[in-house]
Image (cartoon, rainbow, N blue to C red; front, side):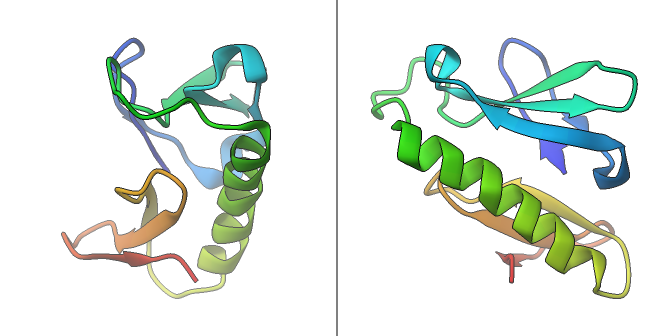
Length: 106
């Protein structure tokens, strides 16, 4: 998955290292990915300075659940893929690691 954040930088996180995905009301513009070893990676779901409303609890939970579902479905596909957040901010897209095209995750 490609984690993007103005505050924390951009990085690729391997799905097999993610042990927990959580969204917390007090930091509603981020999903927190807990990886093997207990480190946390923060993925910004609302751009810094965005006029978009912070995620509601329902949307934040759905986004975290949707990431887990997209990871599980993508793992069954041949090849290497990356998951990125769609422009809407509420749905995940899948792209081949070696390609530029993106499509909505299954």
